Image (cartoon, rainbow, N blue to C red; front, side, top):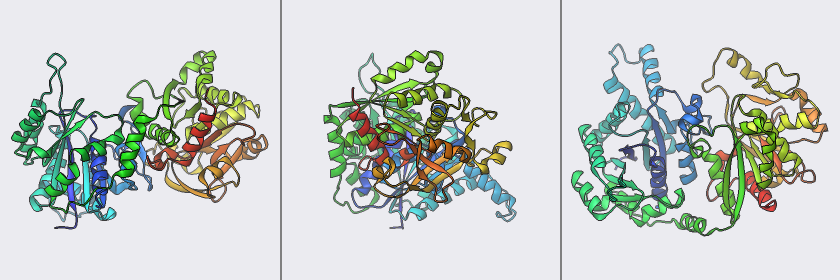
Length: 543
């Protein structure tokens, strides 16, 4: 046996049917059987990373410890397996071509002509092996974005084929394929999946396992048909129906005996599964009948699914609420409507808590400021994330300090009161339009003020959280804001950057914002302490 086994997870028929959750769940199942796993995402786009892609276009930008701006699936991997994502766990077509071209310019190919085949697949293989080396994993799971048959995927499939040809006993392929059920027929159809398998055959690949995604469990007839097409034992055709929550997926996979089947296929010892905590959580979620209503005030609601745009925020709310035996009812509130009709702010009275997530740009920000101020003056628990903390600060400066023109330099560079300013190291970058991977990114420490809500929530004096921002609370206004009652309860170790702003408990039940993104560190079995504190306050405020 070589140092590591590799499982490639590819999609068939259509995208967005849960391939990322499937890859994360495979990792969880194998991890629960005592194996060290690593998950990696390979995306087909030419972008170097996800940082310059609109969340409404491609979903949330997930930030790793080292500052990598990646696809949202890395968040799923972290939440399911607890791994810490870094740049080795993420690869794009843009990264691959940029590296090959750089090496060609550096004469590292020693005068050979550089071609798409085999040089691009070789660079993909190098990155996959780098992921395994960094994580020291027994099993490395690589999810390919898109679906088989797309030309963008060909170099990645070729990389898998080359690895398989070299070490056939160590390379395995899992196909996640959708089984449509035409409404007029009322029965599942496997022909699209058969087509996807044929596409893999044309690349010299055959799936070792097929996950059948559908609204209902795959029928025995469908399993037999797919088994015949790819010459696999029927136990390797796994049913993956829609479930109550994504946390049911690993549990359902084990009911289908996926862990043992996959380990037997890979020639690895079938160790005993230990999914008790996870199974208990999945069971608990279904039984919760009390609700807490949380309004998310934002501006990215007009394009793709809000679930994709704010997936880490949603899951963090879920984790905290479930832990407190409540089911969150999330309402999506477009901030632009408050700008058109301020009387609509009264709908916030029906909420138990208001959450203001991250964002960029001017659109909708006046409505956000109005909502933040309404939550403060009406004692509604408020939790601001990154941009949400900046909005909190602007609203406070306007209403309490009387700085009517207070704003962020991002929205109004000529504001008379720039309480949110461009970070010093970002000024030249913005001027030169140097936007890619240049924000303050990744994990940074903060020191907490003793006795503050933040300090009591975390239960410690120093924290490490992930960031993604270009703007900060302007140091020139900190003293005035503090004199007016705003408490900066979290600061960078040198005391320059304001990391957390809050109002004391005797002034407001919960009014707190973070410059960082706590949602990236919440886990199903370990909710983030600030989300827990926010949900506790919201429950206490229940109407």
